[in-house]
Amino acid sequence: LSILRTNYPKVPMMAMTATATPRVREDILHQLKMTNTKWFIQSFNRSNLKFEVRPKKLKSCTKEIIEVIHTEFPKRSGIVYCLSRRECDLVADELRKAGLAASAYHAGMTDAQRRKVQEAWIQEDKCKIVCATIAFGMGIDKPDVRFVIHHSLPKSIEGYYQEAGRSGRDGLPSTCILYYHWHDVVRLRKLIQGRFLAAISPYDHDDDEDDAAAAADDDTDADAAADDDQVVQYNIFSGHWDGPGVSTYATIQLHEEALFRMVSYCENQIDCRRKQILSHFGEAFDPSECGLVVGCMCDNCLQADRRRLEKRDVTEDAMRIVRAVDGFVHIRRNVTINYCIDLFRGEFVWFTYSF
Image 1 (cartoon, one colour):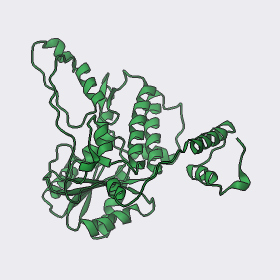
Image 2 (spheres, helix red, strand yellow):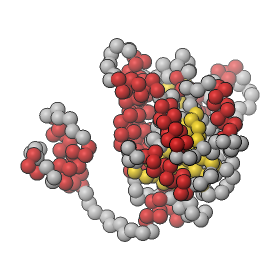
Image 3 (tube, helix red, strand yellow):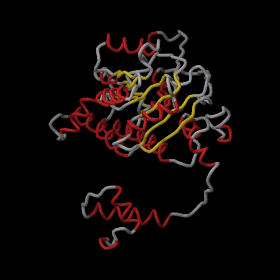
Image 4 (cartoon, one colour):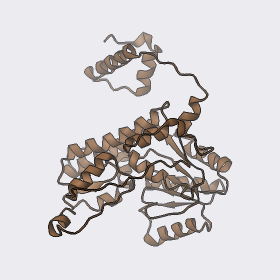
């Protein structure tokens, strides 16, 4: 798009975006060759949204979601975001079996099928809940969405906030629940690395059947993939410009950095959720204002009112953990996170290495 400034140097230009970090805003100005700009920025805070992160039980997550909808949002309209097309179909099927009016929506469906689901959901005609990948939501402005549930971990805070922000457009209290498990992080990293390794050479790496199926099944980057023949493209999930004109390794790093910022958000059980999100977009927020709308205080702020926290220096503990992991790397032993936790707690004293 920078060619527009070259070809039309005297034409006024305006750039608009909904959720962009300070770095992305600077990138946009650079790419569009805009100078002497005036900025108009509104607060990113959505005070009527309640943010929660809940531990994800892999074998019973869908059952828990069904229970939540039945008890907290009966006959209400909502969205359940899933990582892949297959998950959308499975979750929608489970919800229907539980008596909920749910439909799947993803890029594997025809245009006519997606249009039918979208219209039925908007008009609430035999469809109250849509189980979707991120292919759903752009351009949709349904005001009375009371809940957005993430069955799987989003790829970035930008993506998460856009998806969560599709609830409560009418200004009434709405809930955003994210189910988190490290397993989803592993899946997303494999997809990120596998996609770019495949771009280098389809013969330079081996995928097991599960990973190959997951990569083929996943359509979260459908729009970006369609533009692979462009020299450089903007990727909202990494919050940066990428494409064939940018180093593959650097692009992988950007995607993984975005993913681990999302992980940090999920694993932080102390700081206000709003403060974490708004800080990512360069906005300061006072946690004391988290509950301005009744019933919309985030889970961390609610817990802070009920527990006493104490500060403790964990430097020595952290050093021991780093030494243990370094030892495993040196002897080339593959261990799980749970194994490391058990070892650190002293449950395997009889089988301890000396580092």
